[in-house]
View 1 (cartoon, rainbow, N blue to C red):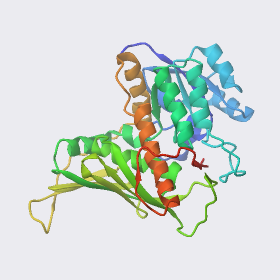
View 2 (view 1 turned 180 degrees about the horizontal axis):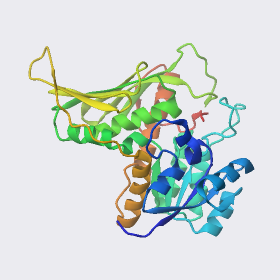
View 3 (view 1 turned 60 degrees about the vertical axis):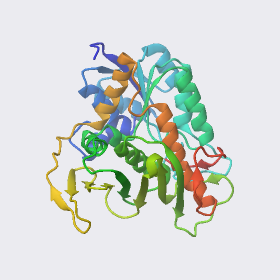
View 4 (view 1 turned 60 degrees about the horizontal axis):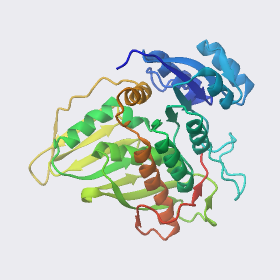
Length: 357
């Protein structure tokens, strides 16, 4: 990789931008700021937030003098190579319900489009990329037209423990893949954007052909094309090759890939992978699977952007793929609103809006 250090600015100086490391989720770099500081390929030079207190704390914590209320000013002054958008998806926080049926706040889409127009060559965007397919379409068009390197914060895609399982699956270790199951209750755009992306990643990112699902609780009433609070959901996804993905609303963020000759299960949110194989139809036997030492997926995500910028190769979470999997996620809600039927991709309607944080 090129030895140039890329200049990084952060928009949104809260948890993911700056402070989440303090919460003790992992000893590995987790916030964007700590990931930038941990990589030899970047330098943290600027931050932007509407709240003065957050700007002051960011500056003190990371030794960054370039702090701004206006992200436009930050980009104009700081000559940034990469901007990480770490705001809430639908401002303002801390509310978690839309202010009204006419509210279509969508800060991730808005900032992606604005930063692309300002000429920033690399973007990290917190998930989801947009709150409706109408806005996701706009992000896809602008990012593609400007040739930007683009990743979002679906971090299991950049986790080397999940990559080890993906490589084993794609190599044929468990035979012909038939099904992937995700275990955990989750809301749709805050949670299942992760689970759907991870299922796709573990399979090698085949095309999604159709989706069906339900929003929970099942008796919840919806009016029109505006979902005011990110709903819990379950789904079934049909990929190319007649492979299907499911979610079970119980457990602790585990994934199990079933093939004709065995299965691999990622346990305890990726902490360990268990391989079972066997030629018999009644019983599989556990076999050794080489688990890898975990590395920071946030660092890996950012360094994937730098690799793309230096080589011209697509990122692991490129905008076309992110757009496709966002559509699969929103299709879960479309299916529910249409009585639980299968929804073929691409969706015909693009206007369904889901408020989420």
